[in-house]
Image (tube, rainbow, N blue to C red; front, side):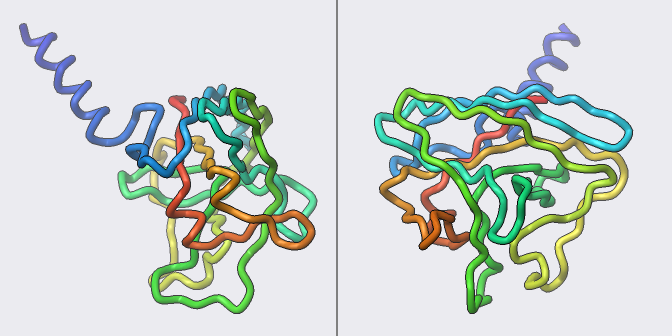
Length: 187
């Protein structure tokens, strides 16, 4: 009986802390996607081999390329409200109340309905905050201490809801964040 109670409590805890594959309830204007990822960890690197399937009936956009002026895909590393760390390809907005003169641009690509995107995402250890507007937060963003769990996530937006800038990159703006579906892999 005690084991069943502990199992039920563990399941409830996982649901409450968002440890399932989907980290936010899908809203009607957000796409349906499925993410699978496999983590490889070394002393100096976290690396995820991932596949994101577009389960929606419309094309989606995934930001999995470099920021303008960069040459490596940009994985964002941010603290999460539940005490974990998120390593993600996703749209991020400036802090509330902060206006930016020029939004950060990042390359992405379109994934057709029913198709998949695959890739490898890497972050070097020790982890440090990586956010397109990190310098605008007051107080500054900080990762939790100790050895917190790291979740790999991918954000997707329906292609009709976000327009590429000249040159094909996408802007990190609140309007994209609002339409984004962020899905995290269990690892």
